[in-house]
Image (tube, rainbow, N blue to C red):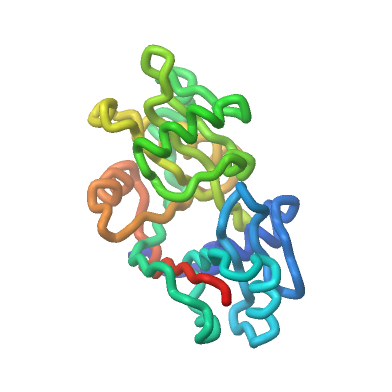
Length: 236
C-alpha cells in the first residue's frame, strides 16, 4: 500500500475538496454542508468533525427522505438517518513521476471525446454495463472518452472528482458484447495522458469485490493508497 504524503492529503476528502474547489460551480451549500447539483452527482460532504447543525444543514439541502451518498466520509450521521448501503473499496493512485508507454494513445486507438450530445448513448451504455452512479449531467464533471463499434458506444471512461492536484478516473465500463478487447485499458491510458498533461495525477476508486478491475488497474500502473468504506444514507 502506498504511504500517505502531503501531496495526497486532498484525497482524504475527495468530495469535499472537489466541491469547495474545481467543482464549486456545480455545488449547493448551506453552512459548511455541501452537495452536488441534482443530475450531476449524489455525493455530499461535511467537515471532518460535523456537529448536529451541519447534519441538519445537509438534510435541508437534500430534502426530506432524500439520498445522501457520503462516499468515503467516515463521519457518522445522526441516528435518524437511515442507512442505505455500505460497500468496501479501495482508493488507487498513479505513482508520481511515472511515464506512459503511449502518451498520445487517444489519437491512435479510435478513442473519441464525448459531449452533451452523447448523453443518451452514455446513459444507454451505463444501463447495460452498470459501472455505478451516472446521471444526465455527470459528464459536466470533466472529460469523458468513448469507443464506438459500428456506430454504437461500447466503452467509455471519464473524469469525476477533482481535488487539488488530482483527477479521478471513473465510469470505466464496457458493454457485455464488447468485453475482452482491451477497450478499458485504452480509455484509461488516454485519460492518464490527458490528466498528466495538466500536471495533475490520476486516481480512482474501486469496489473491493471487483477483483478483475483491480487487477487491470494494477497492470496499468496504479497502486493502492488506502482501503475505504463507501456509505449512503436516507435523510430524516
